[in-house]
Image (cartoon, rainbow, N blue to C red; front, side):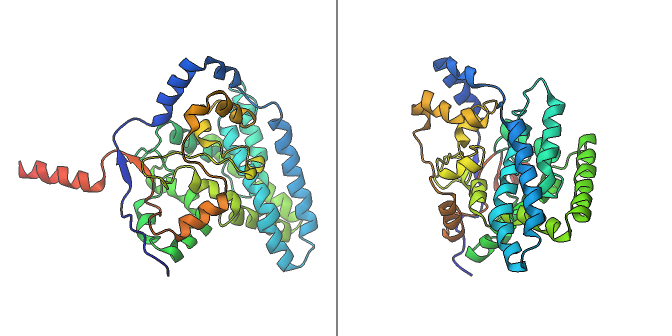
Length: 330
């Protein structure tokens, strides 16, 4: 079963999330960073091209033997569906068409959602923006694992299972940690995605739909691209709560590895994020990664790292219980 994780609770801080302070300081020192703000001019063309490639490749892959379909679900569909999920991340910040065209951003998000087979574009946006505004908040930041995840996934074997099932936990966790009312666009996103699933099933084939759906599950689970889920905010170094990755997979991941840069300036599009580090290099002299595969391996095997290896803001359950006990004794 492997070594048991030694961490039994989150690391709690009582300051504000760090990136707003860094942003203010950096803009005062380097006002030219504002010139980087705005959408990427190519994203609205790249996303439909990737979606088209996925649908065409699904037709041809579906005619291959079962073992080849499974392998390509991980290697090809997994990589490109993860790419499209990260495109939806960019789009949630209105970086395809800009803030002046919110509905065009929502529409291109629906397009990116097609090969993933699971409606997620609008729901992701609804929760992800809270992750930026309230990073580490005890309730509002649903990017942080729940206490149940920390309790059940506590050793090498169970952490491996947790990594494999990451897409399920990311989908289900918000419904329990911080449920929000269903939005009209979420309903439309669901109808849109189910309709496309029907089209794929009836016109390309059931195996094509299975290939794309498996690509989402496998590509967001035990896959090199999925290392970013852990590399971004898990405290491999005590006290540091956001990390950047400067490896080659950024080319397939819309530069999401530039994560400190992204949190510092979420209105800078993926193609300009490296320029922030070029302008203000002294702000990024901190521990970072060059391999997402190494991050996954380290997370699974290191007994000091687990679901609790995150920073939270607010009172820990132990502190809340102690405070309650003090009030009763009064």
